[in-house]
Amino acid sequence: LERVSVSSLPQELLLRIFRFLGPQDLCRCAQVCSVWTQVTRTGSLWRHLYPVRWARGEYYSGPPGDLDLEPDDDWIKSLQDDGRAYQEWDEDADVDESEEASAERSSISALQREKLLLNGIIQKLLPAVGSSVRSLSLAYSSTLSSKMVRQMLSLCPNLTHLDLTQTDVSDSAFDSWCALGACGTLQHLDLSGCDKITDRTLKILSVGLGDSSTPSPAHKLLQAPPSPIRIEEPRLQPMGRSCQDLIFKRRPGGRGSGCGPTHIWVLDPVKLADIEDAADWSRRGGVASQEIGCGGISEALSASCCCRRSQRRGFRTGLSSSPWQYGDALCGHSSCCSSDAAALRTQSDLQATGGSAELRTKCWFEGQSCAEHHNRTDQSGAQRALRFLSLSGCHQITDLGLRCVCLRGGLPLLEHLNLSGCPLITGAGLQEVVSASPALNIEHFYYCDNINGPHADTASGCQNLQCGFRVCCRSGE
Ligand code: FES
Image 1 (tube, rainbow, N blue to C red):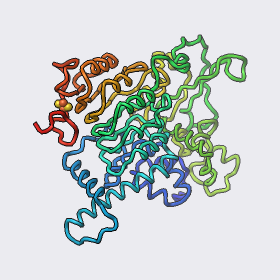
Image 2: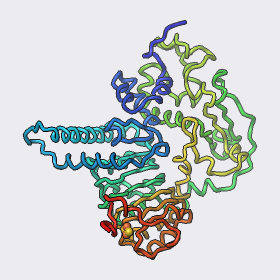
Image 3: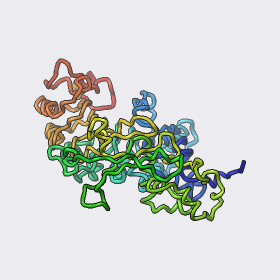
Image 4: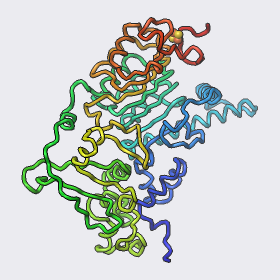
């Protein structure tokens, strides 16, 4: 058996291995060589970012649903103490050797680390992977500024989950959302304890969520009745046995055969991450691919497997003798060799499985249902996706802000609305938002106990009464 060095592994295999690593290990791998640096900058490795936790040695990087995001009181208190120490920190002060001063120094260094990490993410990571980022949790950060948030949001146009709980951000943080549909994928927005937030943020949010009252041309196309199209038998691409899971069906009359409708390729959601990575790598011009002489995933998807082509071309690297490049043997590309490799299907398959346009919008990651991506493409004018909104403690919010967010088609999917600690809103404003949110779960609807609003008997009361660090009109009772 021939020995293969880790440095000769194809990028696709490296990527598979890197998927088992956390953010800290990925950063170490990025320092090995330029090829590894390129692979570690693949979007699917950085879907969920938790820089505040990472700066404190907690390297969780899974979806937010799998994490208990409700930190305990001690954790919050320690973060608040760190924040206070950081604000009072005088860089030029004489060094104090006492025990108290040493605890303070460790708090300050944790926050310095956090700030360094946030800046690194903005300058180095997000320009490369921002479009793949789905979750961004910056809750309880003491070093975060509105400018930083604005930069991050402009680099992450496909965010579905944003948590800014108990941060110092102001309305200007969301200026990058002013373009219509700029946060059209957003499903979860937590601004609890952001007491500088005013109605302006809700106005910007409403614009950014898009306008579902006027369907976009793309959405009209999705809803158009399907044309009666005869589908050919599946034609297998000449890829070798390991590649037979990639099935291409085409509609007659497509491009190159007359004036029929354009092909519509529907991707099986399984392993969509590979395809997004392929686009990611393709955007970068395949520089890294050329470096090690092996094509990217995009090549594998577009025609025949790059490993087979490499045999024809004759690779100059040592890879030509590697076990991934022999005829029908496994090439290592997840898109070719995985048992659950992505299958491309036409619209007819969609109709056969129920004909729902929504099916197209669902995607799966790593073999598991990815709730955060449901309705992703449907946001092109179909429905505003917001399901969770917490403005707990945003005491400057008024009816005007609520009215703004209800415009442009309302919030058809909103299930959770927390308006605890917003004493300036009135029963009329609440009624308006309830009317615009048909999916609202009354058990997850919170507002000030002193407001006579809708569902007064069944809605949950103000949550801030016990909280201690968020505004509440009954604090101190
Ligand atoms: Fe009124 Fe909390 S804001 S009870």
